[in-house]
Length: 450
Ligand code: S3P
Image (cartoon, rainbow, N blue to C red; front, side, top):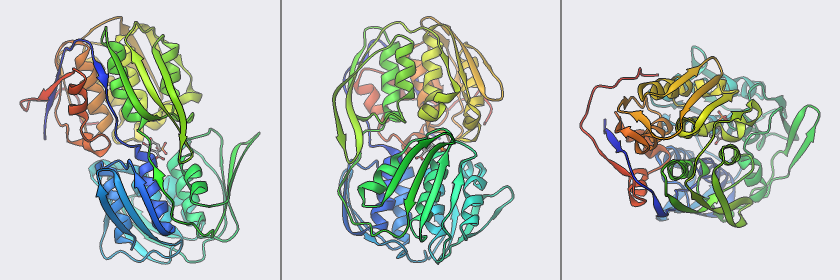
């Protein structure tokens, strides 16, 4: 356990470059390993989640070399060319790594066993196991299709059409990755569009993939068994990581912060839309496209925020940002209602419960039901003065540290180590902007382990 404390802080100022996008980093490593030849990846997130994917791709026969910070060379083996790993693949805390890997393994004629940390072993895998079994893979898991599980892949995967029962980019991606080694067309229909990094990167590596909006939703069709060729990839800054300094700058009066090179894929920018509706001053400068992904420099200045209603349809475009939005809502004037949050119950922790318990412990009036959250904003500094159990959840850890900066009394977290899964260097980046975040003495926690 490594506890941290965030003390009430003055204005944040300056420029900070957030680490590479986690979703895109996983996909870059996986597709580079499935391509023929060399791929040079720049800006790769070197957080623990992505390093698990790198280790797994190495165990499956790809050659990966870290040339410099964020600069990785990968020699791929071609679709269908992965080899059986000699040992269990430990995916740590990463749902994305586990689910995407299951898709890759499903259509390779090899066997592999996947496990993860206590958080990942609690998370549902049926959402990927069910369609992958229908494609021909055998998957044997613990009760409820939880990790550890074994995948016995097939070399003769059947082309497949699947309508997503939950809006999940991980499930969509697992099926598309399995479809890479199936003859013919693999189709995924998503009633609500989710992040499309897999589609963009598959196209970048040379796959034939079409996307069509229809009455049933969005249909994504991938032609199987393409020859993927190694490509350079530039990973943009992660908008889900930028969200933390961005909200901190909004709620600490007098702040002005610039965050260069952040991904602004429209399927990821629900938080920016919501914050602007709350009255936030956020501008996008120097908009450009890098490796098929939209990127911009974000400029944010503090100002009063007002509570809003966040519609359920927006959830897929900001699914990881509700913890930090709840922090902004706690400091805003009036009530914020967020709907369509049932997926938050199956993230790294039960995030809906963790947000509600943590805000209540910090003196904020909050109400959660099965899939919605209502926060009564304080219209300024929140009381604070609590210690939050992070329950192996990086985004809960960072969100409550940001809340502590805008509180009357310090807020501590019991364990900062989960932050390294997505945002290595978080505390240093924030203190560089003027935030008072420092190591703390271990103390009793006041929220339940979610
Ligand atoms: C991700 C998809 C989302 C998100 C996760 C990353 C991805 O999960 O919460 O952090 O990279 O595909 P779901 O697919 O479960 O919605």
